Structures are given as C-alpha cells and as structure tokens.
Length: 322
Image (cartoon, rainbow, N blue to C red; front, top):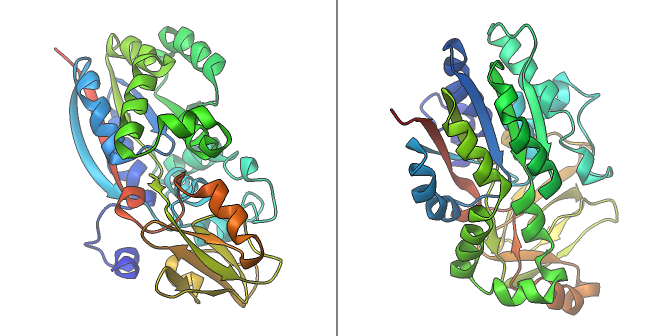
C-alpha cells in the first residue's frame, strides 16, 4: 500500500506531513513551540520514556509512517522540507547531497528547509526559527543552560542525534554488544540514557515555561539477524538495509526492489538507477565479504529498510500541566 500512501488524499500521516499537521497551527498561539526530533527512536523505546514525560507534561500521542528509505538523509529531510526527496532534489538541487558525499553532510540544511516550509504556509516568522543540533553531551549541556533564554522565541527546533550514534556504533564496542543483546535490553538502555541525559533536564526546564513541545523521531531501527547477498556495480550507495545504484541483483524474497524511484518519491542520479530495501530482519552483504560482514553486523540495530519497527513512529504533543 506504500505507493497509495504517497498519492491518495486519505493516506496516513507521512514524514513530509509532520510540520504541517502538528507544528504549524501551534505557531499562531502565544506559547513558545519546541519541535524536538530524537533521531532513531523506535515506538517501543518512546513508550518506555512516556511515563517519565507524563510526570512533566500532559501528553497526547499520535502516530505516523516514515517514508522509505528509513534513513536520516531521506526521512528527516522530508520532515523539515515538508516534501518527498524527489521534490527536494528538484526544487533545491544545490542542497541535495548525492550518495557519494559524506553522510554527515546530508542533513546540514534542515534549518533552511523548515524556515522555507513555514514561509510557503504563509506563517509569519520575521526572525525565522531557532535551530540547534545536539551531537554529544557537551552540546546537550549548552542547550539546557540556554533554555531560559528561549522564552521569547516562536519556534525552537532541537535535533538530538545521540540514539542514532549509539546504535550505529554498537558493533564497535564489545561492552555495548553485551548490554544490547535484544529489544528488551535496548529499551532498558534507552531508559537508563534518558534518566541520566541532558535531554531529560532540558524537558524539566521547558515544563516550567508556558510552552508546547512536539516530540517525534525520523525513523526507528531493527535488530538484523539474516544476511542477504547483493551484487552491483561499484557505484552504489553505502547502507546495510537500503541501497541505490545501477545493475543491482538481489534476493527478491528478502528485498523490495524499486525500478522506478519516482513512484516512491525518490531522486535518481542516473536514469537506470534502482533502489532496494531490505525486508524483515535482513541486511545486505557482498558475496566477496559475506563472512566478514556477518561477523561485524549480525545482531546489530540498523535502519533504512521496511519493518514496523523502522516505519511506525510516535508524534507526541506535550502541553503544560495546570
């Protein structure tokens, strides 16, 4: 049904709809609006945090579907730009990063995208939004200290990348491999992180303001257990659960292959380019490095593919307790 979701008027909420449906109208109130994106937060992880958030705010939770691929360059840019990646690449070619560029550069224009999206909605934002990306504890501490000074802002955008960094580098740390052997352990670690995080301290300070928080994520993750072989040209994007390039051969039982990326709202760098997305708990490996990849990635949490854990996500509205 995914293609129908992209074209039908009665489709569920998708990544490009988030700002329009949950943020825009609240900018007409006199309250400060905080739009908070916790990168790579699964629904079950959020549900573990929800009781602690409910101690600070009134919480109303809705749900949405991430677009494909469920990876930050696509799903998060779609949230901030309010459009599918193919349209972003067409309207802002100077800002769309190709697969050959460093992944860390893919989302450096989010501030521009959200301000442009609000401008197109005719929402008056003379000074634009306040945008801050938090990559580590030190930056989290800085934001916590600055929260009292944001009282006069109309929109404060906070993007936390910590969870994504934790999951991506799990396989590099033997201690973390022991700590996160399964989903239950992942939820426990998420709770432990949250209760000791600067993010929690930041929420406590926001709760003292007359503010509204829209809390969401760009995609989830899934524990991968089964390698599936992929063969392609050398010019192919890196990704364990999503790839695009030319002449891709894969196992159709484990993969969704998109031969016409435009139907999925995806940009292409070559007219014969395809996308592939891993299904279930599979991940892509090259035959020449099959056993090396299995040793390195079996049991790790990845994203980019098609699963409920990656695609069905929370959007929570946090309002002050009276």
